[in-house]
Image (cartoon, rainbow, N blue to C red; front, side, top):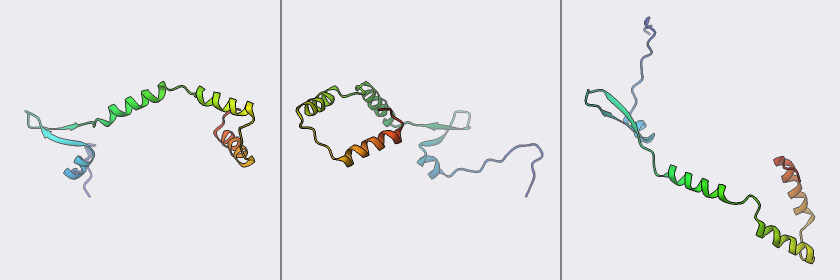
Length: 98
């Protein structure tokens, strides 16, 4: 093993397959030096649009709340004790206050 007294760390050569699988490639610049480039897929823009659409939705679905309230008032809302217990435990686990 050779010790470099100048403090430089030799770079391991990267295989072309590894570079291509990561979405990067090397090309030559006019000066003859290798230049790393990266290309982003269209998925980033899709993710931004989907994120914006989700954030635009109301946190409380008023239509669903109104339908459930109507069922409760009319006496048609039915649930099992197991469903009630699971909902309570789910809220406790997630840290939500009822």
